Image 1 (cartoon, rainbow, N blue to C red):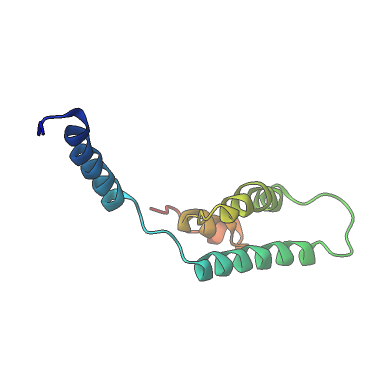
Image 2: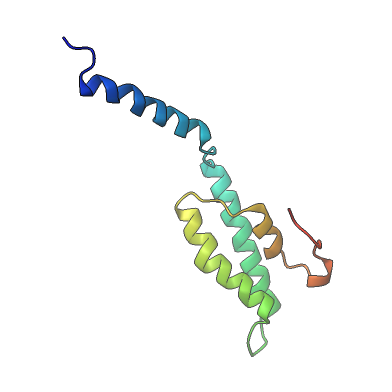
Length: 105
C-alpha cells in the first residue's frame, strides 16, 4: 500500500485541527450554572415589576433597557447555553447609576 495516499495524509491534519480547537474553546457552563443565572435574571425582572406595581405609566429608560436585554438577549442566550457576561450582569443590577462602579473590566 502507498503510505502517501490522500486519505492517510488528510486524517492526521484533521485530527490536529480538531484537537487544537478543543483546547482553545472555553469550558461550557453546567446546567446548574445556567439555571442559577436564569433565576438571578428572573429575580431582577420581578424587582423591576414590583417597583412599578400600582403605578401607571412607562418604566424609566434604565429599567426598560434592563427588561429588554433580559427578555430578548439574556433568556434566548441561556436557552442555547450561553451565559450572560459578568459585566452585563453588573449593569443589570438595580443600583442607581451613581452607585455603579465607574469602569468595569
